[in-house]
Image (cartoon, rainbow, N blue to C red; front, side, top):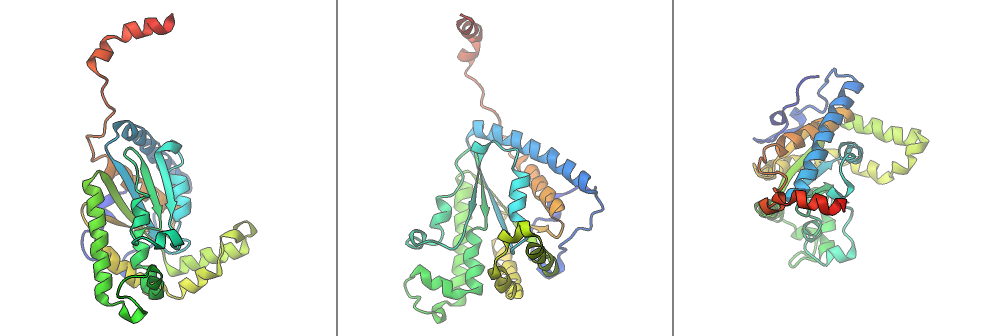
Length: 291
């Protein structure tokens, strides 16, 4: 298998999604991809244990992509070796009545990872500049001052939201949260095949929603708004990675490898040292336990 380099997927300049691949066409076998993933997720699990003891950083993994792009299965496969106390998954659906009584970032603030833990946002704060742009009428549910109708939602409104999101991420990074953002770049044809499989396989019927077909009709709009959001919020301290996602197994390995390579840069994450006085008394403690 060709070596995976995070730099090949990181957004460092304006991108056009239609020019980026949705499949690497890597010739690796299924067993090879699984073996590679198994190796990386074991390393991540060990790192998380050390990070939990170190208790200085939290890690926020943001996953965005169209329906069927593989976010759920990636969470299951990449993080399954983690200690359950060290990782929390949040799937952000339509805001409920309590959430709508606060600003749109509130529910994301309160879901941020504790120090020493990973939090995974399956759909994220970016829904507020993606779904709401395709369906601007949703903004009216927020009961914002000066927004009485869709006509009141100007281009500046979206610019302000991008700035607010950048500020939100800058703030949490400066306070010890490592932020990594992944867009699952899937072709429209691959989505068609996956939706069809949900209809044809009885065991997957529960995954199908007619709403998926309605959102599919807005594919081009979503791609436009994803592209704009990524270009305006790809920062060095909160980077975006574009993950070719037509091959789910390869996408899982790429994401895991990127997380591992990025986390290795934090060389200060180490198990805390015991106090010298405690170490000096180890022999005494052993004797006490033997008694």
